[in-house]
Image 1 (cartoon, rainbow, N blue to C red):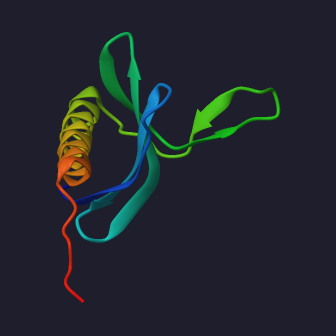
Image 2 (cartoon, rainbow, N blue to C red):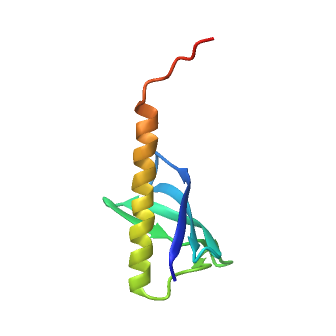
Length: 100
């Protein structure tokens, strides 16, 4: 299974959640609402989940083995880092004046 697209849907400055991401596999399956979390000076991903009646959470979708989870985490965090760099570059670029 190949990761064919990663979209950073939203970036957050405050709190431990830093981004919400969608990942496409083999150009045919999209998984939405993967979260990039920063806690204890470490970045990791949290898969989409739903709340159970007993107030616990259960992943809706998740990697089956540690190797694929590590690869998914690596590429999602790399995409987040790239999006963050582009956002910082955009925010620090001087405003362009247009002539009327």
